[in-house]
Length: 167
Image (cartoon, rainbow, N blue to C red; front, side, top):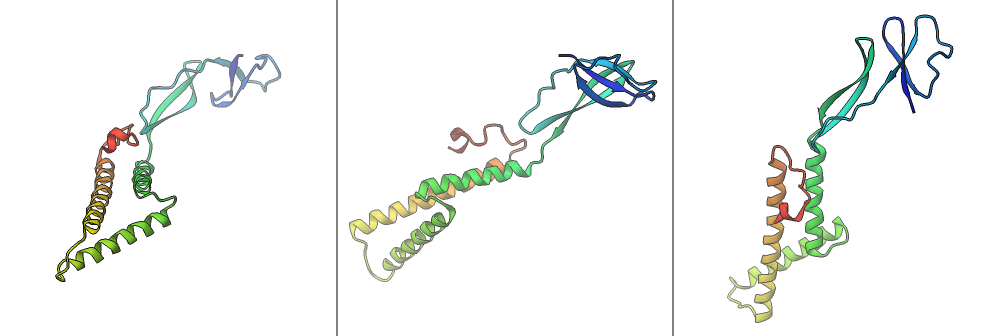
C-alpha cells in the first residue's frame, strides 16, 4: 500500500490517500508525493505523541510532537484507586455502602470509647471489637496517606495502581 500526499502549488498538503495513481486527474500545479510514515517517538504514560504531515525540501515528512498529558486525570485515578481499596477493605459493593459501613464503625467505636470513661469496663468481646475497629481505622488512614503521597509525586509513576506502590 502506497501512501501519497496531494500538495498544492503553494506547497500546502491538501490530503493524503492510499493507492492513488499519481498521474490521475489533479488540478494544474498540484502533485502527488509518496510519503513514508515513520514510527512515533517513545513517550511515557504522562505524554502523548501527535503528528502532522509537513512539506520540506520537496518531500512530505511526518513531523512528531510530544505533549504532556494533563496531570488531573492521573490524580483522579489515584483517588479512585484509594476509594476502591477502602471499599474492598470494608467489604462494600459501592460507595454508599462504604460510607455507611465506616459511619457504623465510627459510631460503634464511639459507643465503646464512652463506656470506659464512664466507669465501665469492656468485656473480652468488646476489647477485641475495639481493637478490630482501631485496626480498620489505621488501615483506612494508611490508604489515604498513600494516596496523598502518590498524588504528590512528580512525575506520577507509571505503576501508580500496583499493589507494591500502595504497601
